[in-house]
Amino acid sequence: MHNYALSYDVQNTDLTDTLELRYIRVDDGNPARDFAVDNASINGQVLSMQAYVPKPVPTCFVDPQNQIGFAAIGDIALLAVTDDEDNTDGVSDGALLFNGQSKVIGQGGAYSFDCPMTEGETLTISSYVYNPRSSYVQLKVALHNVTDDIELATTSAVAIVPANPVVNFNFNYTTQNTDEGDELEIRYIRTDDGNTARDFSVDNVSLNNTQLQIKKAPPPPNPACTMPINFNTDIALTPATSAQIIQIENIYRTLSDIHIGTNETVDFDELNIEFNEALAAYDNLNIVVSEGVIVGETISFGGAGKILKALYT
Image: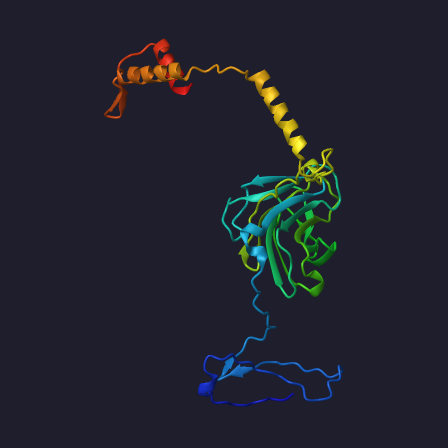
C-alpha cells in the first residue's frame, strides 16, 4: 500500500478547463499486475469512489416523431388502461396492458422507432412494469437489433408476483459499429409458460431519462397497397402521330354530337331574364338581420324554388 500525495496551484491558463485525477501505470503493462484505489481526496474532501459513466449523447429515439409505439409479439391484445400506481409518472396517468389471448410461450410486445442506430450511442433504459392479475407473470426486457435479428442487451427474467406487483427494469447498452444504420426495438418478452391467466402492464419506459410515448403502433399496411405498380401498358408510351390525333378529335366530336347534340339547347337570353327576375323577387323580400335575427317577408316554397332555380342554373 502506498499513499500518494501531490499539490498544484491553479494557473490563469487553467480557468474553465476540465480537470482529471489520473492513475497511470509505468511498469511493463503485464496483465498479472493490478492495483486498487481505496480512497482519494482533494483539499480534505473525500471523493466518491465510483466508475465514471459518460453522459449519453443526443439520440434520435427520444424525438416523439420517431417513436412508433408498441406492437404485439405473439397472440397478444394491447389495451389502454388507467389502473397504474405512481411509478414516478403519476397515478392513473395511463398504461398499456399486454393481455395474452392464447397460451403462447415467448409472447410479449416490442416498441419500435422510425430512426436508425448510430455507433457509440449509450442507451439507458428504465421501465416500470406491473402485474394486474392474481397469478404471477415472468418476463425480461431487452434491446433488439431488428435488422440483424440479434439481442443486444437484456435484463434478467423477473417473476412479478401479486404481493410485489411492480418492478423497475433498468439496463444500458452502447451501440457498436455493427449496429450502425440498423433498426432498434425495446422488447418485453414473457419467460413463463405462456398461460393466459398471466398478463403484464407497462406503465412507463424512458430512454436516456426521456419518457417515451406509451401508445400502440399503427397497424401494418394492407399488403395489396404495398404491391409494386405494373407499368406494362397495352398502349405504346410514344407520342401520337398526326393521323392518330385527327382520329381522336373525330371520336370526340362524334361522342359529343351523340350525347350533347348538335343544336344549341340553352336559351341564354331567357336565363338572363329569369335571373334578373329572381334578384328582384329576392330584394322584395326585404331580408335583413335585426339584433341577430334574420327577418323579412314570408315566401312560399314554390316562390323560393323559382329564385333558387334561376340563381343556380
